[in-house]
Image (cartoon, rainbow, N blue to C red; front, side, top):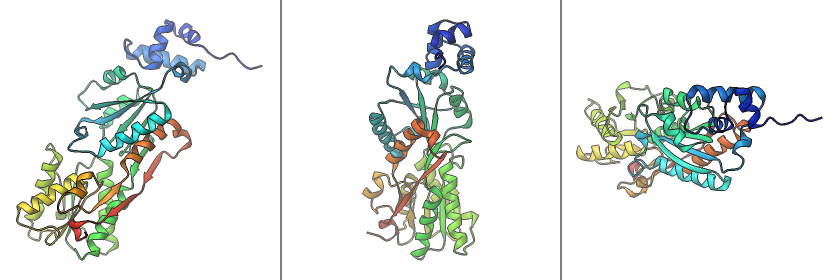
Length: 329
């Protein structure tokens, strides 16, 4: 004979709290201490309550988290495109998406509870302590364009992209190929650097540490990348090509070359990564690795809904797009 389903009243009785307290704790709503929230959730799990039943009467709410340093969508459109994919997937799944930009100094758990989330999709780099606070809420969490521990994640094929960019520069005859990096805490930056070094290794070319320059920390990314390019141009043997960690850095590098009286691609060929809208519109147009950013957002939602039946780490392909900055049309 089937057992009687555990009810919210059973949880309230077992936890010694009111039914409304149980409801708020399981929905991550405001008005409870962390200790009470944890206690109710532990009791609910222990006696076998299915928390999904409590949320079945309303559309589930998905919070799209993006780091404050990535949230200026006008100057950094990568994550605005990811968000479009998230919104499209949410419409199809009957989810309600909300946007939260935050940083490590913000009261993140309190901000999240204002959104009353059922699931959280974190896009781009986040400090470990931030994601620790998020996962402590015991909600489904997935990552886009980042990887950390055992959290489900989807990323572009960054290493292959770095390899393709560097091989392309070799194929057009360049031999002093530099790499402009951003903060190495970013998964994508490290993986793109691995691809760059692997291409050099497989071609029998020694990696020159002088040719790896990092955008100056603490500055706007384009300003830091321009300074990194200026540093490379001051070398005794400056580069004849640059692979930049993203399109914003690549465009800044082109600007620094022009300011130094150099022509792109005659003097320095440049490749970016992401294929943001500006990459095709600038002059010279930018050779880059195309990333389907909306597909990243869509798969992030899929991970939250069906992650148990999907791989933990998912990789989407990238495509080399050759334009004027390396001699294309």
